[in-house]
Image 1 (tube, rainbow, N blue to C red):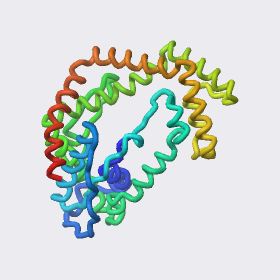
Image 2: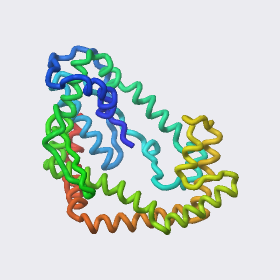
Image 3: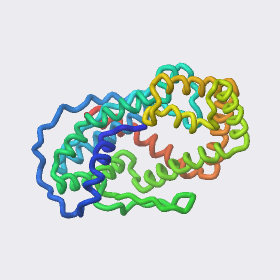
Amino acid sequence: MRATARDAVRVAGVAAAASLMLGCAAQAKDTTPRPPQAVVRPVGPQQTLEAAEDLLERDCMRRSGFGFWVAPPLTPGARREFPYVVDDVAWAKEHGYGSDRRAAVRRTADADPNTRYLRSLEPRRRAALVAALNGPRPTGLAVDLPNGARVSHSDQGCTAEAERRLYGDLPAWFRATRTTRFLTGERVAAVQQDARYRSARDRWAACMRADGLPYADPQESRAAADPERGADRAQEARVAVAEATCALSTDFSRIAADLDRSYETASRRRHPEVYADLARLTRAALPRARAVIARG
C-alpha cells in the first residue's frame, strides 16, 4: 500500500476531472498559504524511489503554479499485506485484519494538505491541477498486457516528468511496471486455483470450523470480521488470530508461499525481458533518487 501526495490529489480530484474539459482550465499562479513540508526519510530502495518521485512531482507542480506537499513515507507495519492468508499470530492479536491501520491511513489522507488544498480550489482550477499532474489525456504511453488488454497513460504531466527523470526510458518503465503488476495478479489467481492450494485451504477451513468459525476460505473470514459490516474489534481480532493459528497448524501458509514462489519463477521464465527491464531501470534510478532526496 502506498499513500503518497499524488494519491491524495488523484482521489480528491477525480470528480473535477470527470466534469470539466481539462484544456479549458485557467493557469494562474496559486497564492494559497502553504504548510511546511514533511521531512522525507525513506528507509529502503522502494521508499527511496517513491520519495524521490514525490519530490520531483512537487517541484514540477510548483513550476506549474500549484501547491504540492510530500507525505512522509508509510512505516513498514502500515504496508503489511497477506495475499493468501494471515499467518502472523502476534500481528493478528494486535491488528486483527488491519482495520486499525487502514483507518489510520484514511485519517492521514483526510488530513493531507494536498487533499485540503485541492478541495479549496474552484472546479476549473482543480481540473487544471489534475491535468498538470497526470497529463491532459491518457495517450503517449501504452502497453499490451499478456491477456490482450491495452493499458495507456499520458507521457506528459508531472508524474511522467518525474518518472522520466528517475528512470530515463519512460516507455520501458511504463511497460515493465504495468506488465509485472498484471503478472502479480495473474500469479495470485493461479495459486488460488491450484489443487494443492485448495486442498490446504480445505484443511484450514476444517480447523476454523473446529474453533466455531465456519468459513470456507480467508475471504469469507475477513468479510465476516469486517468492522464496516458490524464486527467489533474483539471479534475481528478473534477471527484473525484463529485464521493465523490454523494457517500455521495446517501448513496452509507454507504451501501458499511455496506455490507463490513456484508460480513467480515460472512467470519470470515466460517473461524474462520485462523483469530484466524492471530490475535494470530500478537499479539505475536509485543513485538519482538518492541525489534528489539529498537536495530536498
